[in-house]
Every structure is written in structure tokens, then in C-alpha cells.
Amino acid sequence: MTRPPTAAQRRIIEAAEPETGRISGTPAQLDRLIVLKLAFRHPRPPHEHFLTPAGHRLREAADEPPAAGPGPAESGGVFAARLGGEPPSDAGPARAREVRTAWQGLLEIRRMTNPDGATDRPCAWERGRLAPSAALALEAAGCAPAAGDGDGADPGYRVQDTPQPEAVAVHHPEPAGLAACAAALREAGWQVSEHAGTRGGPRYLLASPRRA
Image: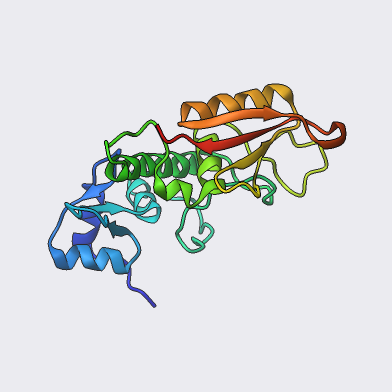
């Protein structure tokens, strides 16, 4: 079983930059945080270290009052974007913090990997993970995913892969909700077009990462 971080490691986590999650410490300390899956080393020079979503959660937990009783255990410590259709789950402050942290981390990846350092358009990392990247952009903008198997009663978005190499489909049962999704994706740097469903089905969006 992996040991929890030491007091010194916690101090490094708590001293991370709030927006980017950038941390500093001795090579041994940083390597240990990577083993604990609380930090990662950026692959491009200057190879700085940043908190993972699990590291951000640990940092934010230090500012929260203790719970009245035991809470649910973390399941893997890895952020998962909600594509729509997942079982109903907590959409409270904790999830909002996770989404905000993941979005800020994604903007930092854009800054570090786009050739011109631009953060207003998707990067190669997102183009390799189209559906979760689009879903994160939607949730970060305040759009809500559909919950459960979907019987038409839940007015949330659903993101699906398509046969096209760089496009995802976004569905929403309400025209206003579909328009809000389109606006959120455009704001996040995606190209969006609206299409009619087959055989009179509901309209949907096709979204692709903007390259320039």
C-alpha cells in the first residue's frame, strides 16, 4: 500500500500555485509526489512539476473543515470528464472544484504545448482525447451532463465520438441547451456546426478543435 504524503510533501502541495498547480521542491520530494500520483513532470522543457487533480484535491481539502463522519474513499484519484449518461452523482461544490482544477490544468497544458503558447484553442493532447476534452469544456462552462440511461426527462448534454477523425457529436434535448453548449465550445476554442438529426430526429452539434 502506498504511504500517504509526509508533512514536508504536504507543505509542497499546499504551496502550489493556485491556478496552475506548479510546485517546487527537491528532486527526491518531487519524484515521491509523482509516485504518489499527486504530481507529474511536464514532458517539455523546462520540465516543471505540477499537481495532478488528486494533488489539487488534497491541497483544497486542507482548507475545508473536517467532516462529521467518515466519507467515501477516493476511487483512483483521477479526474473523469462526464460525457453524459453516467449514473447520477454529486454535482455540489466538490465536483465544481474538481472541474475548475481540471480546466485550469488543461489551459496550462495548452500554454505549454501549443507552439505559440496560446490558451484559446485546443492542443494536441485534446485532439487525442476528443470526447472527454469537449465534455470538460462544457462542464467548466456550467453546462450540465445528462444523468442515467436517459429517457428524455433529463435535459443534459451528451458527448459522443463520431466516425469523423476530429469531431464529436453533442446532443441536448432542449434547443436552448444545445445553443448553450455551442456557445461554450466556441468560447473554449472549438469549431461548432449544428445539424438536423436523421429522419426528423433532434438537432445536434458537430464540434472539432480549432487549429488557428
